Length: 176
Image 1 (cartoon, rainbow, N blue to C red):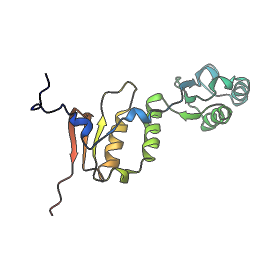
Image 2: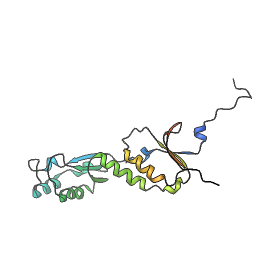
Image 3: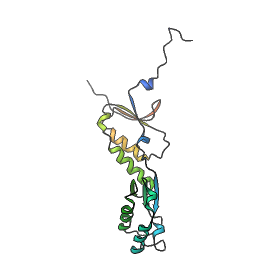
């Protein structure tokens, strides 16, 4: 029922100058695995240097090949700094990365590092949508970081989907 007087359907979102940034694109690719020091402690309380060193030498580090190792201790114990360093040195030939902390802290750090590689000047005077809903655990800090990074350059920043956005920032128009 298309007549000459009807206008063709136009996808105004696709035709707009909006740039969509999906923070999931910055999500770390490597599998993240925990490494709890608790089983390597004497009575799950203290680090005995000789025993700990032997345990690190005997541990199968190859199981962490190309994975991110999250090193932490679930026991309420005082862990000397050298113990974390020894784990990092032992895992280094296998692991893609070694991080001291939990997954939440790791993802915050990984996103901050990935976003720091962006050139914010590439977004000068652009209208940007930071994609909302995510299938991966993108930390709130990543949304804060991208806003902080792009605000000095962007014409506007919105959150959500191009068809339904929440305005976050809009640069005032310059007087001609």
